[in-house]
Image (cartoon, rainbow, N blue to C red; front, side):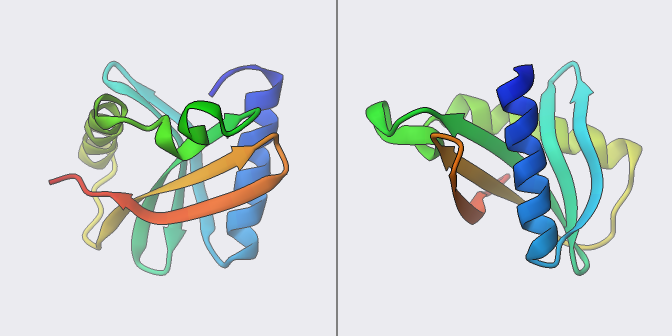
Amino acid sequence: MTGTRGTEAEQAARTFLAGEGLRFVTANYQCRRGEIDLVMRDGETLVFVEVRLRQNARYGGAAASIDWRKQQKLIAAAQHYLQRHPHDGPARFDVIAMAGGSAIDWIRNAFDAA
């Protein structure tokens, strides 16, 4: 996520997740295959978080914007991350969807890597 609004949304998501008990690992992990907005830990689970901000719910809103193609990029970036930073425990993909920058919708296990 880029730009001032994107940075603010990522920071809000990070603060929200920390308040829910997750621990911050890294932000904006980039590789040739894609980018992961946030990497967090939920106990022993490594959580790859996609943060989506939309001004309104037209066209399905923030969560609906993560289509199959975007999921594949996130999965590839997560695989790259895990090659560089091995993790023995479980991992999952979560989505933080924000509408208008205020309400936060946390979707745990938003999709599978399989």
